[in-house]
Each structure stands twice: as C-alpha cells, then as structure tokens.
Figure 1 (cartoon, rainbow over the protein chains, first blue to last red):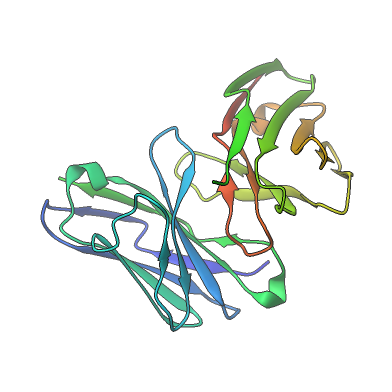
Figure 2: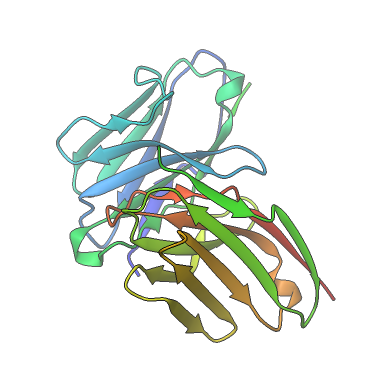
Length: 116
Length: 111
C-alpha cells in the first residue's frame, strides 16, 4: 500500500504556543488529506478535509482559527494547533487518499500532543 | 448528519472462540466499509474492507458481511487468538477517502 509519514510522533509544548504537524505522502500524490483527532479510549473524529491548493473544509464544531490546515502540495499537508491549551492534548492523525488508490485511506503514524 | 454506530463497546472471548462486532450507518450513499485494528498509540491498520456491490468478503479468519437494505455491516473473527486483542473500528465512506468511524470495540481474547 501507499506510505504516509507524519511528524512529529510526539510533541510537548507549553500553553499558549503553536505546534505544527506535518503529513506527507511519500510515494503517491494525495489529492485529499484528512485530519482526525482521537482522545484516549475514544474513536477517531474527523476534524477537516484538506484539498491541495484550496481551503480546508472543517467539520462542525472545529475552530478554523485554532486548527490551521495548509495543503500546499500534492504530498504535504500541515496542521497547526495555535495557542495550544491543555484541552488540546490529544492524538492527531492524518490520512491521505488519491484517485489512483480508489477509496482506501492511508494513515500517518499519528502525533501525540501534550500541552503543559 | 453522517453517523456510524458500533456495538459492543467491549468484547471478551476465550481463545478459539468467534467474535462478532456490528455496525450500523446512517447515510445510504455510503459505499465503502473498512474495518481497522488499532493498537495503543499506533495508527489504525486496515484488516478488511467491503464495497456496497458485495454482500460478503472473507480473508482467512476474518470476514465481513454487509446488508445494504438494513444499513449494517459486521466483522466476524473466527478461531480468535490472544494477538487479536486490540481495539477495532468500523467506518463508512462515500468513496472520497473521508471516513466516519464507529465508537470502537475493545476485544480481549483470553488464553
């Protein structure tokens, strides 16, 4: 299957700072990338859909100004958590899909964010 | 909106027994139904998937059934082994790559 790489895998930051998470498709061009958030012992909740060269589409209840998504190329999408607070601590995971791979989604390794 | 309900939330079976997890989806336009196994702190791992033009699919000890009319699909694991212990998620999609996940099932297989 296709490979998606997400970095960093773990990050600890102070309250009020911003954190950027990168999601890269290594061996295919991802027309669309998705960002999910997962709290401990909970399911993956879709945050936003990221399309290359256009604005992200956010799910209801997700703050656009807090979770900035940029999809500058067909292989890279970034999620920036701005002015992070302890309640933003979570597992963030991206997935990518492409027309060439049909409907299957390919997941990054995930990022464990801890805000102290 | 789109919703996927998954049951049970926890499931404990004896090694060698079968395990069944059920999901129901709300959006009749959904046409792709993957199942994922997730270990703690790791990415979801696709274990099997089914598309809406198929009623059943099997891969060794794992099988998935789909009932489009009732809008539900199920995961069946036979001859369970301790290494099958994990959290399992169902999901539904409309062929866009966007997945709506069920709540998850923690499966424990006792030796």
